[in-house]
Image: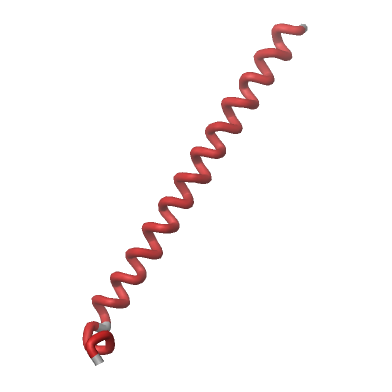
Length: 51
């Protein structure tokens, strides 16, 4: 019984770690999309930037 409980805790900890990695991954993707969006705006309106 104790051993099973220990395994459950280890699984929860590992799952928590994966969740954190997943969140960081999503954050990186979000940042990437923001950069792409900004560069697209710059690409679409170089004239506006010059004026």
